[in-house]
Image (cartoon, rainbow, N blue to C red; front, side, top):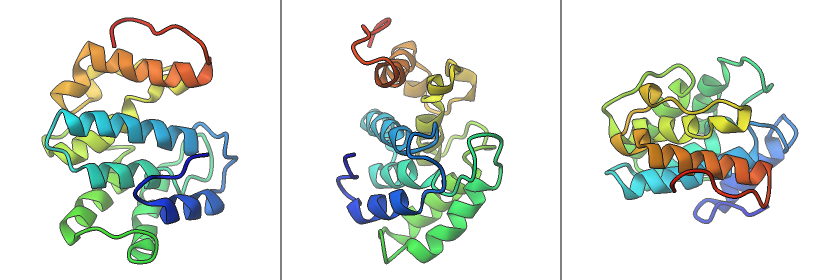
Length: 171
């Protein structure tokens, strides 16, 4: 399993302490796809790529199950206070945005705050892993709502689930 390029210590730590099987629908493969989606969204917006990468690793890190778990975001946001400076670092402004994005990623509504919206969109664009086609009305960024972006994200999920599968639609 490839560790995060910019935060390998954080990634290794999160893998060690993750309470679910590594094959979980909220586990490392999902984190990696959220990271790739986040990179694409950062390239098409002013979203902060550092915050997006940290979000991809942290947002589901405190999950206790693969079902309904509204407390995992707030638990991760709280744990980040201990982990900052030990496993990762960022500016105070980045940390504030990251902590909000992680804490509210399950219940947050589309937002005009670009980096927070990109974090939430990167997670929501990976819903095909659970058989749900991402719906543009729940996405924040114009690029996220484009059909070509949605199809690209769907392909990311499906190709990992079904290796060798041909791409669907435009990418």
